[in-house]
Length: 464
Image 1 (cartoon, rainbow, N blue to C red):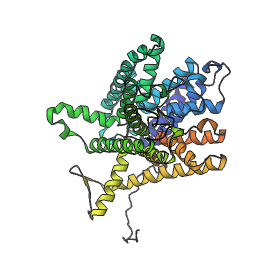
Image 2: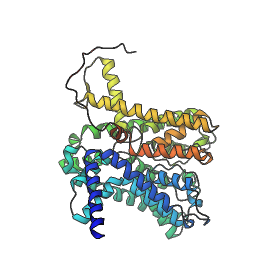
Image 3: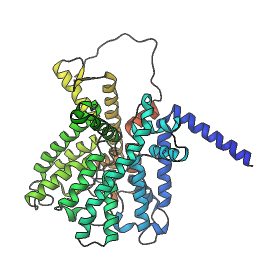
Image 4: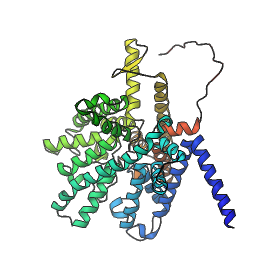
């Protein structure tokens, strides 16, 4: 009997090793789905809910997907519906989703063997968008992920703790809320542990600013953080050692924040249901926060459902872009947008090459960017059609909800809880695909780079 189990175990290990080497994206999707299934089971028992009645399967599944995929969309009120046990399960799901299932597997491998095997490196490379030619850097990246994430989460929590205590919360409640917000902010999850959410802190800079900064930094991506920390070793001219990816991510993220701040602030300035009733300082703070959150944060200090339709449309665009590659954010990623815009600019100038920051971007990067945008848009289109067929909500409401799910943002116009079960399953699938990433989906479908021996003659079609 023991020999039979050892043989079966060896067979499973061989299958995992072979799949990790040949189809890392496909294995990553499978493991991520398994983790979601596990957290769904953990949320089903009666003690997971505050009432003790137990959650419906679709509600437990939706919450598990939203937590593990660090989205923040909810079909039940997190603060009042789930028990302390349920909140703990959600928080662990957020942490695992933020770190990445493959990264967590590599950490466990390090703890056991004090080293990272080839299989774990390939899996982590798939999750963290690290090239397999630089697998020697994966171990450093994993350690950096843990140190940076824990440091930033702890910093946000330590800033929030005294503020919550000053607002009259008990030490235990204040500590729990501070830790919950710290983890949820850096991982761009958007979950809140209280029923009232962040709306009661709309004018409180000591609460809103730390959470906003945590979301912004978390959306930059671990490769950016690693590059900045490495570049700082070179002294005063450290910025010269930043990679093109870092420069594009930071500049595009800042530009999108500035554009969102101006446009959202202008559109909602006189809206009495959002910014209209606030004083000047609170308006500026709320507009800034509303511009950061589409990066994939999902928090809100004003009622998103009360915003003007044109503000929804702008937020749709910001959410679709999302944050940086290999970050806790979703979307098509800011570097994808940057490459597309640079390609348009190069075409307008008549340049054959796409140049920026003294570097030339390869053509295959542009083709990949086009594929990512097209796949993302196709997912959004398909989900919108499905929800429009099974609900009576307007296109603007459905589009907002679908993009929020695809980009794992978590902002909502308020219709998520009113969706029929079929609509909830649609959003579950969209959150899963959005978190796994369009690149991983593309890699799981098109497994190999086909190189033709014979190429057809070239002919240019008419464009535009």
